[in-house]
Length: 499
Length: 100
Figure 1 (spheres, helix red, strand yellow):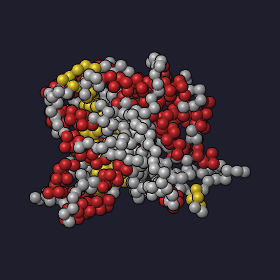
Figure 2 (tube, each protein chain N blue to C red; figure 1 turned 60 degrees about the vertical axis):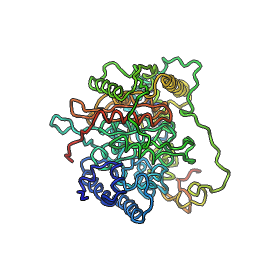
Figure 3 (cartoon, each protein chain N blue to C red; figure 1 turned 30 degrees about the horizontal axis):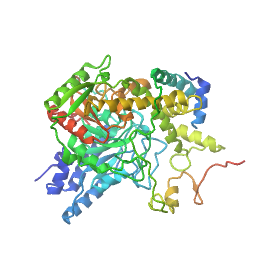
Figure 4 (cartoon, each protein chain N blue to C red; figure 1 turned 45 degrees about the vertical axis):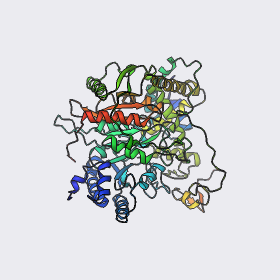
C-alpha cells in the first residue's frame, strides 16, 4: 500500500514491525521518514545531541535484506529508535550530556543497546538528557535544554520542560521523531518525562536490564527501560532490552518473560493498592482527580481497590538525595583527565591540580553540587549520621512495600505532583526541583518495576500521567494494569506541530 | 548540621573539584538548604534496622577462572583502552610529572 513518509512516522513499534515483516513498506522507508522528522525538529526541540541517520539506514538495509532472503526477523526488526546518550555506543560519541565526555567515543557497545541492534532496531541518534542523568527538566545538559513539543492551550509559546533526565527521549517520542526510545531511571527519569509528554515508559525491576555500558550515576538505583507511545510497544521493547548479563554483577539471572504475549487488561482477581501517604497536603486538584479516575478505570477492568499504607513515604526523597549523590560522588571519581574525556592542564600544574581543574571545567553546576553533597555525607564523622541512616531508612521504605504486597498486587499513584512546568521555572532552587520526584523515588529505592501511562490532560492542555508500581519481577502485572488504564483513558492527545 | 565556606572548600578539595571563592560562597547556602532538608531523616527510629545493601535479593557470582573468556574485557586491548586518552604516550597514559 502506498504510504506517505508522514504517515510512517505516525506508527509505533508494533505497527512498524508488522508493516516491515508483511511487506507493506520497507525498513529503509521507515528509517528515511524518521531521519527526516529528526532533522526537521532538531533546531526547535534539541532532542538529540547527535543524529545518526546513517546508522538508522544501515540497520534498516540489513533488515530489508534479511527479509528478502527469507530469514527470521528480530523482535524490533525495522524499528528505528532514539538512544539516550548515556548508553555507550561503539564508534558514536557518548557524552552523558557533559563537557567532560564531549569527545568520548566508546570502543565498545552497551549490553542493552547491543541487544536492541541484535533484535533488528536501528539508531536514529543519541538523545539529549540532563547531564549525567542528574535533573528533572533537561536543563542541566551541556548541549542545551530540550524543549517539550507540548505547549499550554493558552495561545502562548512558553517553552515547557520535557521532564528529565530522559527529556530528549520523551520529547522525541511525543513529537513523533522516533517510535520509541531508551531511557534510564534512577529516581524517576523514565516515568516523570513520560508523564510530562503524554507517553508511556517503564522502569523494570532493578537488575532486569544490564547496566554494563551505561554511564553510571547511582549504581544501586540505575535501571534502563523503554519509552514509547503505548504499553504494548513498551512491552515489546523491554523484552528486547532485558536479560541476564554476566558483565553486570547485579544482573538478574532469570529468564525474560514473554511480556508482550502475556498482556491482558482483564484485572479480575487483582487487587490495586492506593497508598494513603501519597495523598499529600496541598496536592494539585487535577492530579488528585486524575488519580481518582484511574481508580475508577481499574475497578472497571475488574480489579478490587484497597487502601494501603506506606508509612515511610515522606522520607524517601531525603534518603534518595543522600544515597544517590553519595553513589554519584564515587562513580564520577573516574573522570580525572587521565584515561578518557576532557583534560584541563593549567601551565605548570601537577597531577592533583590537573584533576581539580579538569573536573571544574568538565562538570556542570548540578553535577558539582551532587558530588559535593555525596562527598560530604560520606566523609569521616558524617558517614553514619547521613549515609548509614539513609540506608536504614531505605530498608524501611522497602519493607513498607513488602508489607503492602500482602494486601495488593499493584499500586496506583500519580507519576508527578503537577503537569509539566516551564523551562526556568524551578531551576533557581535545587530543592524545589528535587520535590518533583516525590512520587517516583520510593519505587526506585525499593528496586520495584514501575511505569507511567498517560491518563488525560490538565486544564492547561498538558498531559498527566498515572503510575503503576509492582512487586519485584512482576513487570507483567504493571504492564497489564497500564494497559487497562490505556484502553479506558483513550489518550489520543498530541502536541500540535509548531517546530 | 550545616557547612561554612571552610567546610565547602575542604569537601571540594576531597572531591578534586577546583572552586573559586565566589563559587564556594554560592554553594554554601545551596548545600545548607539541602542538608537542612535531609536532616528530617534523623526523626526516623531505625533501632535494630540494618542498612540496605542489596535492593533485590541476588547472589554474588564468581566467574569461571578463564583468561580472556570475554575478549572485550580480557587482555591485549591496549590500543582500544588508550584510544580516548587525552594524552597517550608510548603506549601508556600520560600524566604530569608526579615525583619531583
